[in-house]
Image (tube, rainbow, N blue to C red):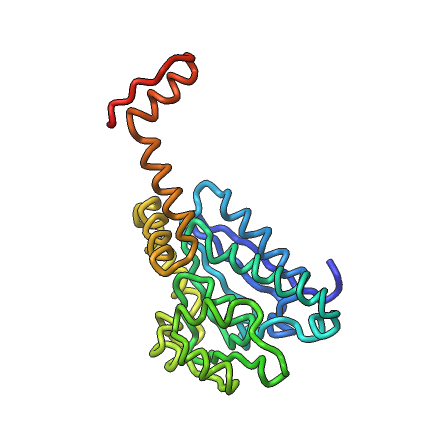
Length: 261
């Protein structure tokens, strides 16, 4: 691993995964290596047979994530910025937004720029009362690059996103709760335990029902609607007697006799 490029860790506790951004000395600013690790861990979680919920958090007490590492992306040529930074971030964040199991963010500190955009991929967000939230890109002559202008609008509406993105103003935890950006404010210093308790509550529910409900809620909001419709339709069709007849007729090289049941 390149020096000071940070890390992302995965810990499993029974049916719960805890994923931690680990670069606290740089306020967990994201590097290309950390993006790759987020993608790898998402794939690992997807294939894990017993996991039912994920908690996404970060190391240290000051910040959840202050966004993309400026020193990394500011040194890129325009085409590399497009190919290897913006597009990669979108692919990774989209992967997290469409995980099979729910993701709960435990926001231990400030979430700015790409850090706030990463939070938007989660299903439920719990914050420490000292955290603040901002989209500061316009102040350094750039724009939100990882769906801050899209996914965040679905969460809190265009007016609130414009208020934050066009001014760079930080909002506190209370305002984030009022706008629907976060769903719960923990006691000071207790955000991880609060998020884990929510993950445990989710894990007590019927897992397939939880996963299907999550998928159809997202589909109703316009996220991966085609995948939701086709996967649920395919699963339903596979339970029918006609499905068994179709497979049997194919194996036996005969004409199928479908009954519509």
